[in-house]
Length: 356
Image (spheres, rainbow, N blue to C red):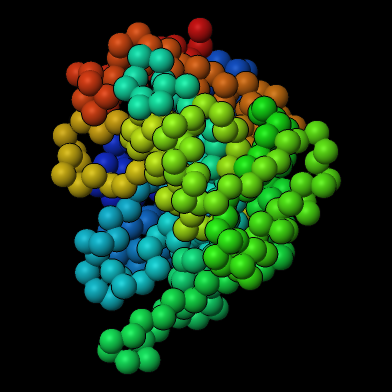
């Protein structure tokens, strides 16, 4: 196959430290798998792009990304942007909307040698990314939030059959590659129309997957079940806000948000993005944990391998995951996981293990 063309956006805060770490590991893994090297294209985004291009997400970046096979996105610190940029849709949300990245896939798997609250955790949250209870995803223009009076605030929640069908299919297809179980998370007992539609359509889609076991759980009960028996769950599918909250919870159960990867994907686009924030308090000090960004890059390789039938990309993805876990198991980790390695030292340890 011809080399993949992948975009790179460093982002803000610790982004310029952890994204290059992920690039190094991907290069090493592809070389070890006998695959062609990636053609990387660094593109402006975030605070530096505001200064150079007058936009946190320049049009030139969007145009260039459309010609790539996928991309790595560093964390952003949009809360620190000057106005009017602070009040605009943040860079991650803008990219998800522009490219209709409807599936946010967030695995949580505990590390041997880590500090997991629930050490047998190995599950994936599949989050619908375009509508639900996040009002900024639900309108063509504006944010879906409005105030008819200074003392009344109203947020719009939208659920459509088409959006639920495609996120349900994503969850069931993923379950077929794992342990063949899907849990639909909802609140249909109270939100009978909106969350009820989500539950009903997911269960309809399940009929096309007779080999996958399906059940459904109320969102409040799910938080309790995860705390008590996270190891019993495989793939959870949820609307936007529920999925966001659950994936933060499962990330901590598995050890730390610093180790929580994710991708945002459509049928033909994929963005690798760590689940955590930009951590500006430690930026530039070599303390950042690159695990989540590296594992997100591995998820991108796996997505490319699945979409293109590329066994070498899939092999490289497995190599990255195995190398990260081997490094942590050997006692190499950054300060947030109880170790003393710098960002670069941890990355070196992973690169050294990728070819083994």
